[in-house]
Amino acid sequence: MTSPQEELLPGTRRALLHRIAVAQREGRAPSLVAAVVRGGRTVWSGSRSSVEGEVPDGDVQYRIGSITKTFTAVLVMRLRDEGLLDLADPLEKHLPGTGVGEVTVVDLLAHRAGLAAETPGPWWERTPGSLRPGLADILGERPFVHPVGRRFHYSNPGYALLGALVEELRGAPWPDVLRREVLEPLGLRRTTVEPVAPHAGGWAVHPWADVMQPEPLENLGVMAPAGQLWSTTGDLARFAAFLAAGDERVLSAESVREMRTPAAPAEAADVNDGYAYGLGLELRHQAGRALVGHTGSLPGFLACLTMGLADDVSAVVLANCTSGPAPFTVAADLVRIVAEAEPRIPAPWRPLRQVQEEESAVLDLVGQWYWGTYAFGLRLSADGVLALEPLSGKGRRSRFRADGDGGWVGLEGYYAGEVLKPVRRPDGTVSHLDLGSFVFTRQPYEEGAPVPGGVDAEGWRGLQ
Image (cartoon, rainbow, N blue to C red; front, side):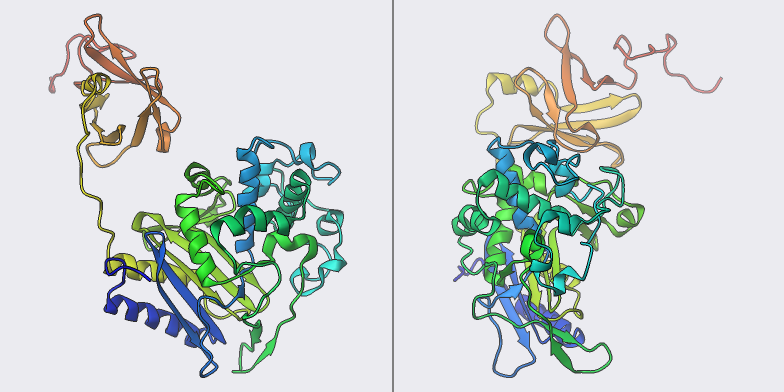
């Protein structure tokens, strides 16, 4: 149950139901279920079905395909956080004998290992995993199709390798590790490797006729870490809340934030489409809104989990058909509907509780600065972060956090990781700011300031 403050307005609920009703009808899906998360809780769920009287709810399982990869990535990040591996480690260090050991763990997570998209042999999603009993069977004789680390190329076998890596370092099967380390701590009791009733059946709908036939249901074997899981909108809503905020029992907020950061070289087409890939998560831009999550598909099923972090709204969409509704488009629309109809109410502004001596020194830094003739403003917020913003609205901006040594480390953008250093005169007053060798002064090309190249002795002038 949600409190009255968390419930969506009737008009919003109707708009959400209308969107999934249109998606189910126009996409000709046997059934479609969806949920919306806000404030870490499910605030709406809905479903549509072609079978009268049999409307699935948030407890009915659907196959989620490649959303499984996000679960596998969480397990790998846990290994990293425990110090059992480094993301820069070559695979060979922990899983020898694969034949592709030069790729790094992060290459695999970010789909930049250069591996083929699919396995050799028959279509792996529609055939038994027993046809591919080992890693050699999913890699084949020509595992690489691109140079390692040079470009983003989605690879299902790559995530099978990550699942094998988890098994090697944990000494237990991937399903057991997943259940013990992620599913049970997060309370995802309806997320399983094999279907557990009630669950939807997977269907193929004829592209030119309103008829359908069942799709085969196969265990994917060693490919399971790339797409095996079954789940529900209820469980995936809880998983979305975890991916947005972290949970110290599984992964910290900092680690899930790292997963949400682009990590793969983008192709030109991906840049045009507003698509990037992090560590087990897809990043997209839709109608000016940044969204992060993952899509999934296997014969008979379509799935999407996406999060609009700035709006604090996430959506899950599941359908039991091979093709038809576009799950990302539907999920993105659900986020948009809630974000626009009921925009997030920000927390009240609050000042710093008390200005300490070191914070008083920071006040000497705030205000207007110039890099050459470019004007910037430097502002201190209540969370102790300095924000540098161009006053023209165009230019490089970043936030900085104190490094404990008198400097400030950039948190984002061009200046991420760069150090902003206040340079003081002998009397303690601030002379200028040094930001990665760039000199910021209180006046443009301030006389007497250490501007590289010097300042013209005659100063500013008009036309002669």
